[in-house]
Amino acid sequence: MKYNSGLRVKFLAFGIFALAALFIVRLFFIQVVKADHYRAEADKQHFSPGSARIYDRGSIFFTDKNGKKISAATLETSYLLIMNPTLIKSVDEAWQKVSPLVVMDKEKFYQSAAKKGDSYEVLADGLTKETADRILALRLNAIYPIKQRERFYPAGQSAAHVIGLMGYKGDEYAGRYGLEKFYNDTLSREKDLSFANFFVETFATLSKTKDADKDSAIQGDIVTSIEPVVQKFLESQLAEAQEQYRGDSVAGMVMDPQTGEIIAMAAWPTFHPGEKITDLSVLPNPFVEHIYEMGSTIKPIAMAAALDAGAVTTSTTFNDTGCITVSGQKICNYDGRARGVVPMQEVLNQSLNVGMAFVARQLGQEKFRAYYEAFGFGEKTGIDLPGELNNRIQTIYEPYEINYVTAAYGQGLSFTPIATARALAALGNGGKLIEPYIVKEINYQNKLSRKIEPKIIRQVIKKETSEEISRMLVEVVDEKLAGGKAKLEHYSVAAKTGTAQMVNPETRKYYPDRYLHTFFGYFPAFNPRFIIFMYIKDPKGVRYSSETLTEPFSNLTKFLLNYYQVPPDR
Image (cartoon, rainbow, N blue to C red; front, side, top):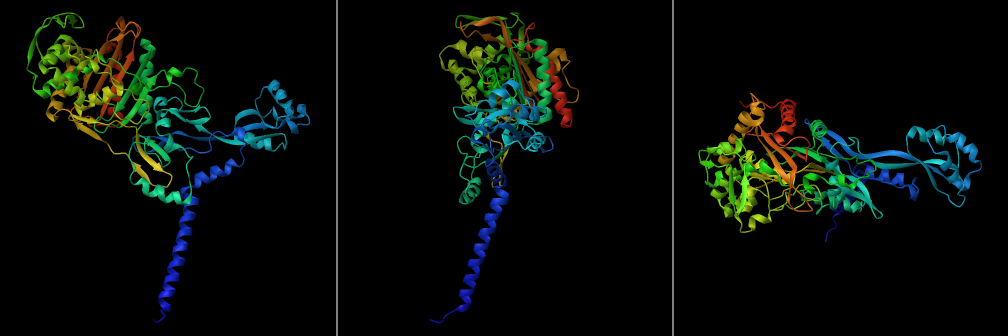
């Protein structure tokens, strides 16, 4: 066989080229893809085991209306001041040199210096680089600064229930609430970071799903849909309502009803994620970890179900007697007053419990239950926050007419606020049940990224029904809410208030004088950009949610329309 020297040269050249390419990729991997990681690893060489906090963790970002990322959770570099008592020669001299630079307790300083069998005592925390450099300039062998990186929350308390916090569970320091917990594996930096793993990450990214808690092998930063200006304005409105009405708690959220993207979410009482928490009861996010009987904000859902099924129409009338007896129990309108023969529009306008009992009976228990399941009340929403509770809807499966009659006006069943807001969004978005979400993008360490796509679960009601119930709710705002004063001349707003009796957890009976006030609305009503859901628990000195939440809702509505420059629709 003839020897082919040209082929051999080509083969050798290809091998050299492949090897060079491998080294280039390796260099890119070290200097670009994993640069932050290796810088953090280098910093570890300067850490004492007792001082280690967090060496590396992914960041969390807000997103403003123009798409700019704003830091919500990141790492901050600071310094510990360390003493080695075994090296101290003159405690008085050390104190005189160091105390002008650092605020310390003198007694503790001397106590630490007296521990001659110890080589490591922390004197102070949170020192700046400038202070650390000035201490190093003193050239004290026994006292020196140590660099550390800690979790830092630039927004302070803003969106605290969404962001969550870091905390210890035994010796493990990890995300414990909010996005810090749900996306802990994505944000953490503890997995294998070998060169081979770079290729695994690269190809795995292409098939990632949104279930970060189930499939989180790839690490990166997360970008949320929280708009910081809207978030601050929502928080200010909730704070004013709380100050005026002194509720046990107050909360609100803004969502895009077309996609499920959460634009703002806030609750009070709240906390600062970067500070010590003394009251652990404030940590759970009430939108997913609390359930309530929602009251009359649920009435449009039952009405929409009956309209969709053809059980009633907007021209259907009934004779309102003020009170009726169902399954041996008396139910009444909020004021006990009879209205006589009225159409379905007045059932919503005047929030008539007896009217909703009529609607539920026309629909029938089997269809009523099927629609409530379709609206998502029999399942979790799937929002990317930890600890989401199941709704309590068991009573509508029992063979008692009273159960679904009372459920039609928002009593007897308990829902999470996020499940309620999602169901109400379907009224305005053409009848689609969507999956709410907060993280809109994940930027992986391998420099690839994945955008979270909106997810439609199912069609709940027909598009025509969505338009019909929206027209009814616009009339509620234009004619009845605050005596018509809440009407916006150039924008259609669909909204409904709710006032629900609260249950005494000890007696399992309703309090005679404690109420949950709820309020929802979406706008522009026939192609909504936003849906707002708000509640205040046990406000003092007022009876109805139209008194407590109309003003903050109206203020937030006007702010959003102006801030996003939404064109008028009428």
